[in-house]
Amino acid sequence: QVQLVESGGGLAQAGGSLRLSCVASGLTFNRHTMGWFRQAPGEERTFITAVSWTGDKTFYVDSVKGRFTISRDNGKNSVSLQMNSLKPEDTGVYYCAAAALPFKWTMRSEDIGSWGQGTHVTVSS
Image (cartoon, rainbow, N blue to C red; front, side):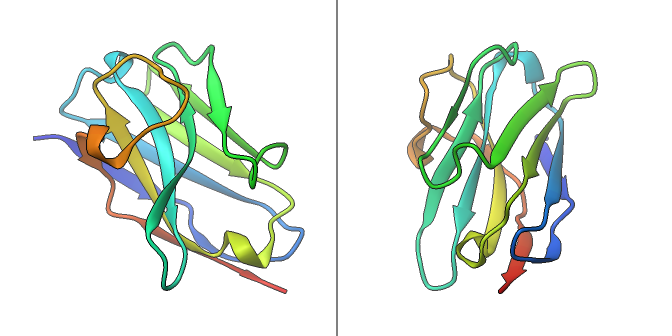
């Protein structure tokens, strides 16, 4: 049974930082593109960042580029999202996602084989 367990969400002030982590089990981790999606209040879940199997390639949507950093540790089956310079518009539920596909820069919801349970991030102004 595949499980993606997230941690690290919470409350931050604008300009602050948070680090999200996701630990995977039940899958061949180093053969999965890993990513993070975000669902803002009242909106659909959208892709924000992905990392390749070996971690050598990453992609960020423009809204988080330069502020967020995705990384993975295949030895620990984990992927992290370091979020700096947080803005109120970063508020939402963040989902870890795994796709059994080679890195293709972005990730589509229909390609996701496994989702984390979601972790809440609230950024106050």
